[in-house]
Image (spheres, rainbow, N blue to C red):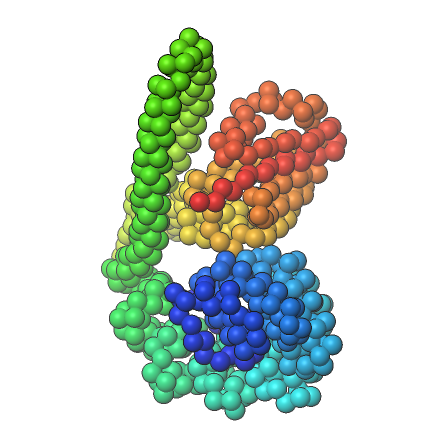
Amino acid sequence: MKKICCFIITAIVFLQQPFAQTKDSIDIYAETVSDTMGINQLINYCFKHKNEQPEKCARFSQLALDQSKKINFKAGEARSLNNLGAMESVKGSYSGSLQYYFDALKIWEALDNKRGVMFTKNNIGEVYGNLRKSDLQFQYLNEALAIATENNFKDGEALVKQNISIYYSSKGDFKKAFTSQVEAVALLEEENKMNDAALGYSNAGAYKFLSGNIDSALIYYFKAKDIGEKLKDVRVLSMSYANIAEAYENQNKITEAIETYNKCIELSKPEKLKEQLLFCYGQLAGIYQKKGSYPEAIQFLKLQGAVKDSILNITSAKQINELQEKYETEKKEHTIQQQQFEITKKNYWIAGGIGLLLLTVLLGFSFYRSSKLKQAKKLQAEIMHQQDLATKAIIQAEENERKRIASDLHDGIGQTMSAAKMNLSSIESRLDFNSAEDKIAFEKIVNLVDESCKEVRNVSHNMMPNALLKSGLSSAVKEFIDKIDSRVLKVNLYSEGLNERLDSNVETVLYRVIQECVNNVIKHSGANELDISLIKDADGIAATIEDNGKGFADAANSKSEGIGLKNIRTRIEYLKGTVDFDSAPGKGTLVAIHVPLHKG
C-alpha cells in the first residue's frame, strides 16, 4: 500500500468546454478547423484523450499549433505547446517536454497571461522534479505559487501547494510537506472539490504516519473516510480503511486493526480493488503469524497469492489477445498479398507467352537465369531464417528452464521450508528442553531453516525476477543492483523513456545481458564503481555498462575472449542489435549496446 496517495495535476486546463465531436468524426473535423473556437475545441479533445490516444493527440496538437500560427492565435499556440509538453513528459522524454513548456512560457509572458504563466511554471517545476533537479523544481514551483496567490487563482494555488508538498516529502521533510498539503486541502474544500480533498487528507495523514505521529495520522485518515462515505466513493473508503487499519496495527491495537482490514476487504472485493486486497491480505497474514495462529496466516497468504495470480493472469490474457489479434491481422495481409502475387504471376505468364512467339531462345535463357537467381535468394533467406529460429529456440528454452526452476524453488522447496519453519516455531513452546544447550541447538535449527528459505527466494528471484514480469526492464535492473553491497561496488543507474513495457523477448534478453555484464565486473574487474545507462528513443534502446576496474587488453578482439562475451554477442545479435567493447589495462571497461525497436 502506498502510504502517500500523490494526487498531482500535471497538465494545464484552459477553456475546457465539452467537445462536441465523436471519435468517428474527430479526424474529419481536425482537418477543417480554422478559427479560434475550433482550435480550442481540438486542444480540449487532445487534453482529455492524451493518455488513451497519445499518437493521435500529438498529431492533432501539432495541427492546432500550425493552425494557430496561421491565424496568429497566440493563446492557441501556447495551449498546443503545453499539450505537446505534457505528452512528452508522459513518454519520459523530459528534455523535449521542457522545450515545449519554455516555448509556451515565452508566449504567455508576451501576452501577460498570468494563469498561463502560472500553470506552465508549475509544469516546468514538475519536469525538473522528474529529472531530480530539486533546486530548479523548487524555484519554478514557488514562482508559480507567487503568481497564484497574487492573482487569487485558488485552483492553481491548490495544485502548486500539493506539488510543493511532494517536493518536501522527497526531501524527507514531512513537517513542511504536511503544512503545504493541509493548505492545499483547505483550498480544495473552498472550491468544493471534495474528492480531491479526500485524497489530500490521505496524504496529510501519511505525512503524520511517516513522522511517527500515529494519533494525528488517524485524524486525517478518518476525515478522508467521512468524505468517502458522503460521496459514496468506494475507492476513497477502501483506501481510508486500509490506512486506518495500518495505523491501528502500528499502535498494537490488533483487534481494531483486524476488524478494519476486514472492512477494507468487504468494500474492495465487489469492486475488485486488487491493490487494497493485496495489502490487507498480506497485513493480516503477518498479524496472525505473530500471534502464532498459523492456519489463519496460511489462509491469508493463499488469498494474497490468489490475487497476485489473478493480476498475472489478466496481464497474460491481455498479452495473448494482443498477440492473437496481431497474428490474425498479419494472416489476412499475407492472404491478400498472396492473391495479388498470384494475379501478378498470371499476368507475367500471359506476357511471357506472347514474348515467346518472337524471342523464344532469348526469353528462355533469361527465364532460366532469373529462376536460378530467385532460387539462390530464396535459399539464402531460408538459411538466415533457420539460423534465427535456432537462436530463438535456444534462448527461449533457456528462459523457460529458468522459469521452471525458479517456480519449483519458490512454489515447491520454498513453501515446504516455510511450512517447516512454521511447524518448528509452533512446537517450540510445547517442548521441554533438558538444558540450555538443547534450546540453543533448537534455535539454531530454526535459524538455519529461515536462512535456507531466504536463500531459496534469492536464487528464485535471480533466475526469474518478479520485477521483470510485473514492472519491466528498468525496475528489474534496479531490483538486481539493489542487492549488490554498495560498500564493495557502488552502482549508479540512469534510465529514460522506459515508462511503457517493451516486447517480453527484448526485456528478457537485455536483462540477461546486463546481468552477465554486472557479474563479469564483480568477478573479474576489481572495480568499486559501475555506471549503467538505459535510454529508449525513436531509434531504439541504447545501454551502456561502464566500470572503473582494471580493464583488459585488445578489447576489439573480445569475440574470442570467452563464452560469457560470446553469449552477450549472440543474444544481442538475436535482437538485430550491436554490442561494442572498449577497454584497456588500468582504464576500466565500457560495454555499449544498441537494439533497434521495430514497430508493427
